[in-house]
Picture 1 (spheres, rainbow, N blue to C red):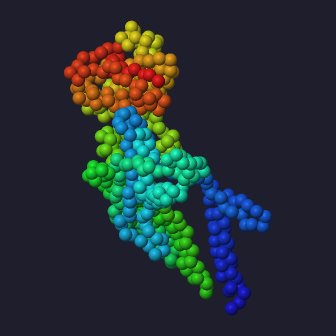
Picture 2: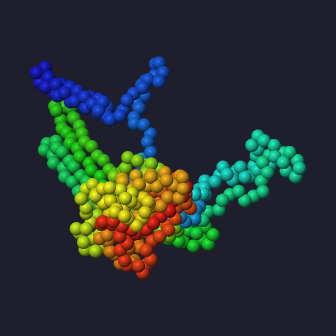
Length: 460
């Protein structure tokens, strides 16, 4: 074969290899957040990716809100334990191992921690260390470095009289019960001479089934079953052909899918919240509205105290129930959150609430706005020197039936009490001193355009 005949094939081979080398090196260079560091002389540089962060989920705000709601509800502290939350799908791959996380119980523990509030978590999943130390104590082998008096004698071991382990009130068990591959998929592929692009999308789903059980009676208080779908995509292009006697097979593409285990975590967190709500006898609907389609920038711990406030501008369902779509909106800048006697577009003229600070809610809404948060700050400052009164007001266009009025008022009081509790005011120092009787259908006016709906006294 002549040199002229082989030259093009060599050029093609060199071009392809150069293209592959540039593509691979380019991928490494363009990878976001990937740096290298040489830790010692003579060592190969170690790639360093992004730093560790809080493992957040779309349920962060809802869980923080629910913890605030439990505090505001003022119920007893509950001790919750977690049993085994297993993978019952049976899906296993020789190359990749279990398709579903084996740490479902750990995710439920974390969900309880994100709720916080009056909940206390009892360790029942792996009590090995605690049981071992109790055995050492029983054999008089465990000490703390100090001498202890037992029956008039000084001994180096820790005396134990029993009863140190706190009982649980309820425990959560269950499992991940479904993994349905490829419940729907589609795409296309076009090739000419073994060269062409391809693309496809696919969807799968998982389901979780949990229950919460009374630890003493073993009665199942509530069961729950949740499912979630996941979508993914794959795109690419390939070349598969001979150039002379050389065969070139080049594939370029990308694929992605919503993280499966993150979706399972989100489903378990929502299930945990609903199960705890059943034992606490509170309605989690308010907080379920804080569930997001995206992952927030703040964790549940950082969202405490403000998660009960829904996004401004949301139309409250109560406003639409009256069929009055015009009363649900007001001009921007008009605020109900003003001290009595203050000047402004909504200032009270000789308001019946005296020198009490006022916090207001818009038509049919239970959201604490920014000005309302400032009013609560002033209430806490006043309470530091003595009892401080806070009047809750609303638009005088609200004229609900007694049942709906009481339900909305409960939500508003819950929002105020939760926000005060998160400012360090003890629940016992917050008292509702007045609210309309259920048979009272009158409007208690307080200045132009406003009515009084409740009064709270705050002590620190």
